[in-house]
Structure formats: structure tokens, C-alpha cells
Length: 221
Length: 221
Image 1 (cartoon, rainbow over the protein chains, first blue to last red):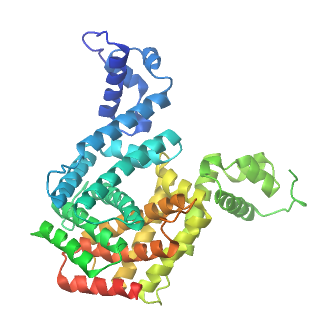
Image 2: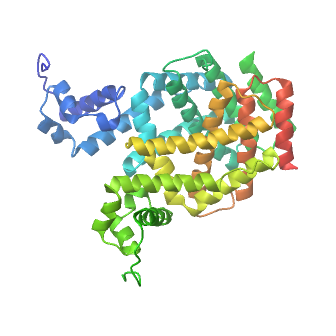
Image 3: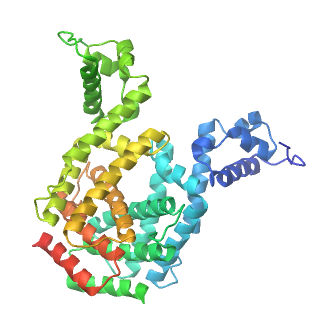
């Protein structure tokens, strides 16, 4: 255990940001519960006591790390609205899968674990999911569909669907076998599932159906 | 606060079962974190100390209450396989919605909150979701579809989709407005969404598509 070569003097804002950033990095391979304040302080080359000069409590520090990690995921999965909608959707899903693959523990602790107990954690989780759903609603809007209240609800549910599929897929693929689902196969399924869910939530008119299937076909072609 | 009229002597097994049952009842309108051991003991007419004669810790008591509540939900939502598959699916979804409507806090704390921290709680949650997915796979099987690994993954994701839609719908309907989604409307959407998701997870062959749409149409007709 060596302290860093030199101890740099930072402004309070910069120090706070540095500590949060270190927390986000360390979160990639451990859950929030496992995130030790001692180790963070050591890596930053400050004392445990000084860390609590910047954060009122371990909980406040954890909340800020969770908020920053959620922000990073939102940035990385931002769809490019200049692309055709189905392409934008596919790329955003690809980025989401990559994010979860790189940060499996972070993701688990933030988006699933943080669902419990702490109201502030819960608010971060809800806001993250809502942002992801709102983006999808914007993309679907581009496809020319008017989303009813029911369809909007379905899009929110679809975000939970995507999360569950990706988390489960990663767990199943720790040891991939001959029957395992491939990454491209999963990406295609997730992309197609949005028009499919939109169909289920619509009144199922033939015109809408054809539009949705056409959008889906582009993916397979 | 009056103690119950008479204090009944029960066998250890019966007392344990009684305490768990009381916990499950009280969980309907409070989360697991809010479930007070003191109140449970008082309602059962025993001392707090005696409760800990039956359970090693508050945590063990909570785990057993969670397990019993999950078991109750699984029993109540069991599909009737003698019905046509789409009807069985609709009835199981209806029972699930009723369960969450009657036990909103219980559901939140068990199926969402319990997702964090405690490994045993997590195992109960995972087993509950897996049971629900396995039942669906059995119903889909009846419809004559062979589910690929990808489609099975999609069914697990669909359970998360249903949970999210129902929980969100209940939260939105605390004060229903003119644009609110009706109960029947939601039930129809959830029922249709399974064939839709199955379609997205299949190779999208026309034959499969027609079968799925036919199954969906039965619902609207």
C-alpha cells in the first residue's frame, strides 16, 4: 500500500469531483455496498477524515457516486437523432449493452440494488429509467407514431425488459455454451422488441402493423 | 393498544407459521423495512423476546415473511392450463394485477426493494420471477411454439416488463385523469405483449407471425 507519489492540492470543487470520479471508476467491479471510503481516500492520497470534509456522510458520498455513474450511462447511450430511427435505436442499445458489459457490478448496484430503501437512490434510478424511456419516445415519435398513454407506459416497461434481458444474458454468458444467445442475436431481438411492444400497445390496426413490420424488416435485411 | 383477549398456547411450528402469516398480512400496506417486530409480537399476544425464540434475528423473520409472501403471489397467479392458452394468460395477468393492487407496498418491497443487498432476499426474488417466466414458457409451449434460447430470455424480460407496467400504472392511477389508462386496456396490452415479444425474439417468419397475430386477434374479438 503506497500513497500516491505526490499529494496535489486541489480546490474543494475539484477534490469533490475527483473523489466522485474515483468512486465511479471503482464501482465498475464492485457494488455500492462494497465501495470502501477508506480505499477511495487512499487512492486520492487524502485521509479518511478529509473525505468527510467534502461529504457529510458515507451515504451522501454513495448518492453522489450513483448520480455520476447514472449520468455517465445516460451520456454514453445517447441516441444519434441524425441517424435513421431504427439505426439510432440499435446503436443506443449497443452502447447500453457495452456499458453493462464493462460495468456489471456498477450497473447491478445502481439500477437494480439501488431500487430499495434509500429514497434518494430510488429517485436517481427512476430518473435514469425515465430518461431512457423519454428518449425512446422521441425516437418512436420520429417514426411517425403518436404514442397513446398506454403505449408510453409500454415504452417504460420496455426499458425494464431491456435491462432484465441484458443483465440475465451477461449472467448466462459467464460460461457461453453451444445453446447460448450471441451478442448480435440479442441486439437484434432488443431492437425488434420495441416496434413489437408498440404494436401490442396500439389498437393493432393493419396500417400501423405494416409500418412497424417494415421498420423491423430493415433490421433483418 | 389492547393485547388480544386470550393468550393461546400454540406448538412451535404453529406459532412460527402464525407469526409469518401475520407478517405477510401486515406487509400489504407497509414495506419490509417498516415491518416492526414489536407490533407483530403484540398482535400475536407474545413478547418481543419470545418472537426471537422462533426466529434467530429480525432479518431471518423478514426473509421468512418475504418467502411466504412470494409463495402467496405465486399461488394466486397460477394459470389454469385447462383454459385456452390466451385465456389462461389473461387470467393469470388479471390475478397478478389484483395481487399488486391489493398489496402495493408488499409487492414493492419484495419484488423490487428486496432486489438489493441481502443475498437470500435476492434469491427469493429471482426464484419468484423465474417461476413466473417458466409458467409463461409452459403456456407458450401449449400454443405450439418452440422457444429458442433467445425467446426464453425474452420471456424472462417480459416478466420484468409486466412488473414495471403494473407498478407504474398503479402509481399513475392514484389520481386517474381523462388520459389515464383503464384497467381493461392495460390487461389487454399486457396479454398481447407476450405474443409480440415472442415475435420479436423469433426469426420473424411469416408463418409464425400469422400464428401470433391470430392468437392476438382472439383477444380483441
